[in-house]
Image (tube, rainbow, N blue to C red; front, side):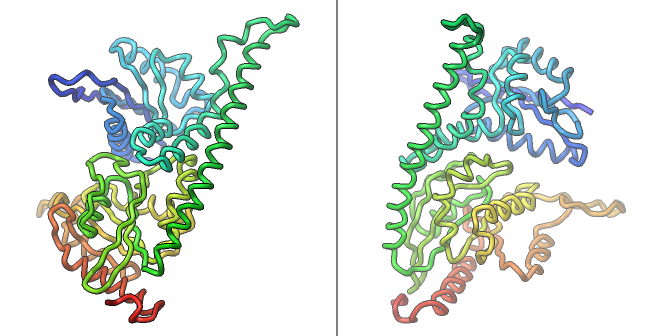
Length: 405
């Protein structure tokens, strides 16, 4: 089963034309087509964040992606023909391609190839502001690049060396390139260790204040909530990965001070290289006393996003932290009321906000609250609840009069 969806280019009048892209995804047999469309919506949002305009989507249902060319041969020919006919500059695949898949696809395609991992890495590199974040992203990029160096020097493979054998110059060039990349990776890791030690000293100098960290899927409103609570000016934007650098602010509720940190957002299929290189940045999460897990309740797959965040927290060693679920963007929540004569079972789209609240509040194992950071809905209750949680941590760990003033 295949489906192609054409999307009109979104290019503003008077603006230079952006690079145009097609999106390619394999729909697994265990996956619903609607879910794959939502995944492609996220991929399109990633492309938009990278300033790439999506013009068409290609999907193909397969048990698993082809180990050679990701999609079937006929589908790849169709994609290549479309890209050539419409002068499309890049094809973006919704999974991380292996080096072999990348080489095979590049031979068949008339345009540049990006996989999901490379697209995310490019976005991170463009949005990193501090030297620390830039170093982390560069390390992730080099580690992604290293196994893919083979094939970059194929134009030299048939050049003869001094002994008359084939491929000498090309092979030497590849080995030189690999050595350069390995040396660069080693240098970046040393740089990160130095910065890690500096940041560890900074964290130790913050005293014994309770630490609260904002975590969640990317673009759920963590930075907006941070600005509201800490009265700071953390960069917030309706794009994926608007915040890469960890920001820490001292917040005082009534007579109770604590530290609040905003961290990089998580995402489905977050590249392994990024998880590894950003583990040091996420030390703020691992050392936090309380996690505020911010959720975009208006997103149709918000429960899947909660599962992605929980899994990522487990991977970085923070899965056992106390969590306060913060359902944000209640002002944007929509639902479809069932007709009185509709006897089919209700779906997730048929749940009203009140029904959703009751179902989550009934799960007493995790405290939660529903609010809108942008509209400041229910913020006063959120402050009171957060104050109570932080105060309980203070009272249980530190002398009472050391911190309340």
